[in-house]
Image 1 (cartoon, each protein chain N blue to C red):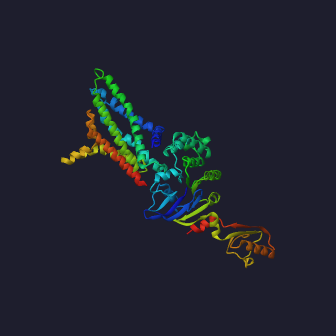
Image 2: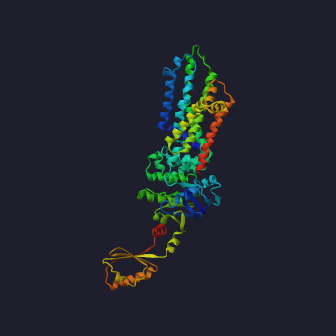
Image 3: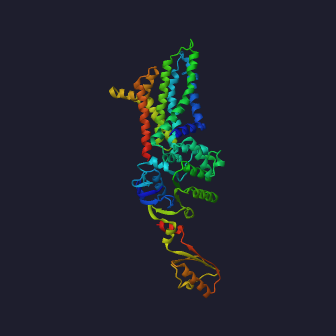
Length: 240
Length: 302
């Protein structure tokens, strides 16, 4: 399993398009956080990174599917899937190895944005005047949103051998989870509205953004991630 | 290590691709698995390796059920699929080491095995190349090396020489002969010459059903007839052939006839008498055993 994990990480970093995807992600965030007039923290007047946390999940809707779309779909298309499936790897080990690799790639994509935090610390009127608890709560929330989208992306990659289809399905499911379901809750009322709101990823993410890490939010993310990984495992297992 | 296939059946939707397929490959045997395109060879191999599940019947490797113990079986088998899937972006040692890792080999052993199989498959010189930059022949060698890294007892090769040029064909056949020593090897192919060179036993499958299985010698003997080829400078007339004890006659050209017969010795004597009687100029007369190709053709042409 470790061998497959390493192979996945290496495959990403030995591919030019991977650097392109990460660069576009970081440039987009840089423009949103520091340059665009409506969203720049320099015009914002407060020492926090609200624009980063507001817009990054929407960038993730495209970034994570771009990372995960090839993970299973490409193996199926090129036939290397047969190579993996006739090795002593169990189906769940394939899912776990590929998912962990996606998390590492997410981590490496996200980690450069920490520099924004240190920049704001320095730029604050009175250096260090920033709500660090809120920042790191939101940052963990951001990572969990990315981790959930990675699980969704892996699941989508298991559905098809076409990377484009995989990307589109993953982006759509991620959009449904982050914004779509909560928007639907506005169309309903009563318990159903509460239920739909609670199912939405944005609801739990916003709670974490306040700097309070409540166990139910963590359980939500872990539960959803685990569900999509189990769905992926079922799809792979059914292949047999 | 042996492979036993019992009453294997498999459907893809409405189409039955395997019907009660039964055969056995014993320890140390090289089994040639023959059949036309779409006969079910690859499906059978995929079931033996655990990639596909049969609808009914059982595949046993060394007495162990593939269906019940796919992981244990995968460690015993080295498998080269028909399309030889490889990771083009990897270097050869990197790829072979990755495969060793999948088989949970320790790093030292893995490095040692990678070195051995690269030397065995003639890849040492190419070790600095990415797989995507290799020729088809070398890619096939990498595929073979991949199936050998974990030193399996059983090797399954699905059409390993398809698409190779004549020189590569000879090299890969030589390599297969080399690696088949002390291993049980199942080889699917369309090329009869390959089977005659490499295999001890032959299984012929047609439309999902085994139509023949025996040793190569027995299969030829069971065909029961030999071919005598006669070539003369003159055109041989039909009336000269009256009384010769042949079964069928094929006029390949005016002066070249192919007789099938049960007793080639008797036919040869009769032909010599005919040549003397009509004062013909003999170019050649030779006897050929009915070859595997004609046996294959007669069993699978329906």
